Amino acid sequence: MTCEDPPMRKILFTGLLRPPLTEPAPRPDDGALAELGRQLDRAARRRLGRSLAIRQVDAGSCNGCELEIHALSNAFYDVERFGIHFVASPRHADVLMVTGPVTKSMREALERTYAATPAPKWVVAVGDCGVDGGCFAGSYAVVGGVSAVVPVDLHIRGCPPSPTALLQGLLALLEQASASSAARP
Amino acid sequence: MALFELATNGIGVLSLSCPDGRFPSVAARHPPALRLERTIRDLFGLEAEGLTDIRPWLDHGGWGVRHPLGGRIDAIPERTPYPFLPAEGESLHQIPVGPVHAGIIEPGHFRFTANGETVVRLEERLGYVHKGVEGLMAGADIATAARLAGRISGDSTVAYAVAFARAVEAAAAVEVPTRAVHLRALMAELERLANHFGDIGAVCNDAAFALMQAHCGVLRERVLRAADACFGHRLMRDRVVPGGVAADLDEAGRGQLRDLLDRIRRRFPELVDLYDNTPSLQDRTVSTGVLAPALARHYAAGGHVGRASGRAFDARRTPGYPPYDGLRFDVPVLEAGDVNARVWIRIREVEQSLGLVDQLLADLPAGPLAVELPCMAGEGMALVEAFRGDVLVWLRLDPDGRVARCHLRDASWFQWPLLEAAIEGCIVADFPLCNKSFNCSYSGHDL
Image (cartoon, rainbow over all chains, first blue to last red; front, side, top):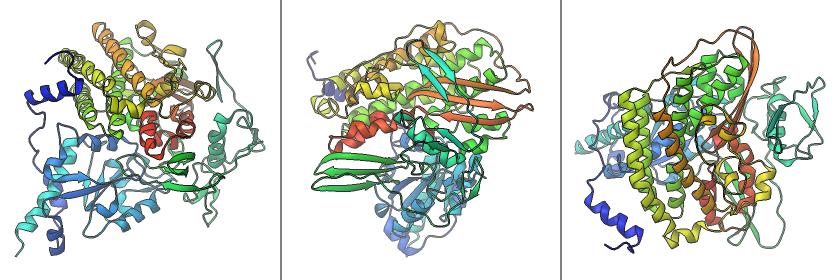
């Protein structure tokens, strides 16, 4: 290559020679598997296969959880290799991933987003605030945890949870979906 | 009210008691104070005399209480619709966006009025993530309040923790050990690096140039991993505490940070080259979303928003705080005020932060990490430069050492209104690009 090569071509070529950064998949989280113990119905199994479409909803977070959810898509975690991808509309989603203590001003938006998500659907609450409001619990402006507004299937704790913790939770969800799918008559 | 005089770099703090629940409106003469005065009305019930826009700002009518930090009266049972400002003319249509957006971002509502593809008016409606932080802080012990301060805006958790700690230390007249001061700056610069990498990549991604996003994402992840290895948390949350720091850096950690710097210095220049030499990308960023320097000055826009529009303000320099007074760094300034300039300011600041981390690692003083805080009444204020601009924290401590009142003001307060100005005349499709180039905090603003 000459030095006149456009930078894009140079970066793409050198990228071919470097080993991939993507890490092996972590084990699904046992606690998450236990929490997800409920049996999926047949319709859910047929619909989901091995793929999950996630719609993320910030219902009041400090944006720390969003940063780590973003990190799931970087070259190290590469969440799409598992068939997990983020979608732009709740109408395309299987999973609502909700962060934050739900603020009173976001309550209606969260309810409407949930209503707009077609069944079968799961709700994953991310972060310590999503459990019970965290350090914002008791405020005049906060409803509390996500389950105070919509039914929650899985909590992924942390402030914020690391991308690995998020991945472990999501893989547990995926494993649960495909395990029920394999048992399909 | 805190005031800054440009000519002398002087900072003054005014207090006014409002026994009859009124105060003269500043916004009537100086529009940047408008949303702050609407907020004062929402939270405290104090009326700004002469304020022309009396619509609520943070209060969406769902709290069950009005004036939660003031007289606390029952909310009006029925919510009234929020009247957006009018836009008049032929063939105009409105596009409501949010509060739930298409990407993984925070909630807020944007009301566009467009003529075809061209934005005639953008009006923001914020407040969706108001969590009542100042209410939670009133009466809280220092440790609880510090944890809350670190959760005002997750991307600036170090900056907020430093600002809160410095305000407490000013109120209690405490001197922090020099090792802690240096470690704070080290964490703050790592936070700046991580955020700038994230933003540079994300702006390019909003112009559909995913290659930059992928490579900048790798650099960001490397910074976060180094932070985790050195300080025990990827975002370094709760590592800065009033009185000092809660995490030390050992020799192995120093080595890891040096490796990190080497790696970034090897990779980042080719990404800058990529940004600079991709015409299809430049086509989207150059001359898009121009913020006029006069407007940036008028609103005292901090951070990359101000510095890309000719306002050479950086709280690390003015008023300055240790250890930056003893460190060498430039404050890059550009005049163009477009998306491109805001990207370039970040690129230059990455380079400056690398140099600062170098200096901090080379000269890390030995000594204790923290001092005990005395239980005493006092009032303190601090101004700290977060990655997106200056964070101001003012607080008053009770004699038993609890927080009586605390106010935290994000740089976003004076950047959000400018986004409305910068997008005017652009096409709707350029909004994500402009918005990301500003990258204002929703949570930091809504509190």
